[in-house]
Length: 391
Ligand SMILES: Cc1ncc(COP(=O)(O)O)c(C=O)c1O
Image: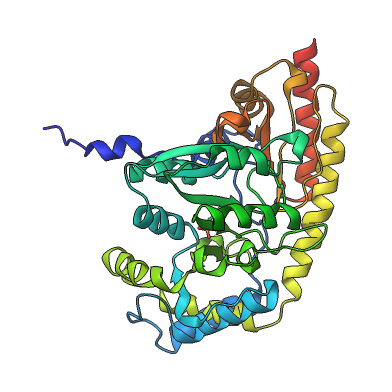
């Protein structure tokens, strides 16, 4: 018999990082040495106070269902943290806790978009934005992020893409895959457009704690924006907790009941012991967050300086997140074949810029969430690859 999928499944994309990880692991199983620069997760262990609090929670009996939108104490801790870290004011009832930040994308795009709507998303950008807009049946409209504009979106270009059908705008600052950070003036101009055209904004701020110059600013703090902004954030990147699956959204009040229903219809609630660890993460000691940031800053400088020394490659210094997005057009190769060649023949797992949209052609994405020793090894191998291509 053949099991037939619903046609909507043809519109659902994927995230290439996980596929490249599988290929890299297969090569390792065959005995190849691979430096992993493909997957976007801190290589640090979760700070021990958080781990201990998760264990204690399980031992104390946090093993049952909890409220769909999250434990009240965690929602309070999140609302406090968001106010303290970026001055955005949300009540605990406006917080929805989810297994990772990713479900917030899934829920928001499913709940707000339908055929006939348009949604603007960053290109290159996190691949799930495009995938989920397509899945919803709405039209996905890319806004290009260009190197010559420091990978910040061009506000005039954004204005030219807005039509009567535009319902939602996705922002991601600091950004994956480029490391670009929107400036205050960008956010002010974007906020004016959002208010003028009555747009909802999904502001993915998952890398908010990883800004190397200046400070993270949330668009939710701009005039008229709190009532139309959903902040997506989580514990994965800030506290090195990717495998715990703990994230959240902060919503305008009128959207909360729909999120509650999506939670009830999908996962029921986020694991309650994990939520207890989340309370410790936000309310306990914060030294590790700064230490992670400083380690990432050193690694950023190491990899960017190293890439800029390689003939055929140039790399802007990203202001946030933990990704370098080098321009590889000088190598004479396109992104995907180059990424394949690096993995298959030089033992470096990297992602093609095109895994993040058409505007990613000419670039690779390298996650520098890896040791300085491994980054140095990867740079030597990338140099050897570039030299071979010139020969
Ligand atoms: C831009 C962006 N948003 C959201 C996420 C989701 O993170 P998580 O679901 O682990 O919280 C990621 C993860 O790579 C990301 O890069």
